[in-house]
Figure 1 (cartoon, helix red, strand yellow):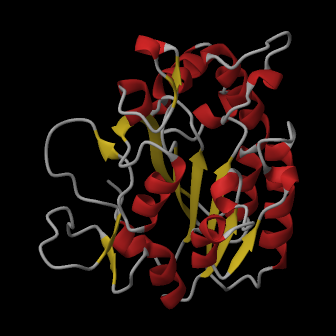
Figure 2 (cartoon, rainbow, N blue to C red; figure 1 turned 180 degrees about the vertical axis):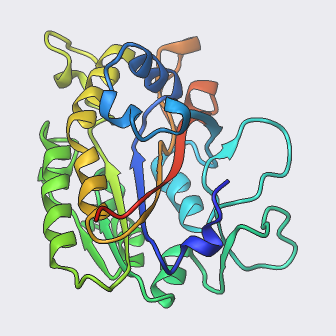
Length: 268
């Protein structure tokens, strides 16, 4: 685990959730050479297999923003990267950045970070009270159909928006940027020519599309500071395994997600 206690305050923070991405799909795409750009950033060139705290977007992100990122799948009490202070915590270690706040977004804001959400799926669309809960944690939040599941160019549009935000922020102000990537969520069959229904193959094709664009955000953030990065899925999804389709069900393909954390140096 990285020492986030020392990194917070000197580094920008980037949290990217690859919404609905299955671990096995991410690993297969990596092995087939479909995600060469992301592979350059992954520790040891591979995804870590973890268990998500929630089996659908809202539950998982509520946990993430409370400091409960996906948990290593090996048994044990694993120290967390971030935590909000509460009595009796058994997973707060010496390297954990602990906030006296109800969530890590508020905690980072109190440490001087400008907090930004670039939404993707419907739980970030701000079209209803429920769709406003997560984005309202941030000082600045963005959502439109151009970054949603209905636009096959959503990741490109999210990166373009991130560029404008990053370049407009004063250089000495620390930034917490959160991006919920919607391209992996259903429907992802448009990314696989000829496909009519979603599948592991079409999700892998969607991930290859994301790979062509998302790493530009890493480069843009490195131009202003070192960056503490977390890139992970919030949950997987079933494509017919044991009769299950979709998520919000307790199946291994839903609970098991890809995860990576790493530090990028400032580009000088």
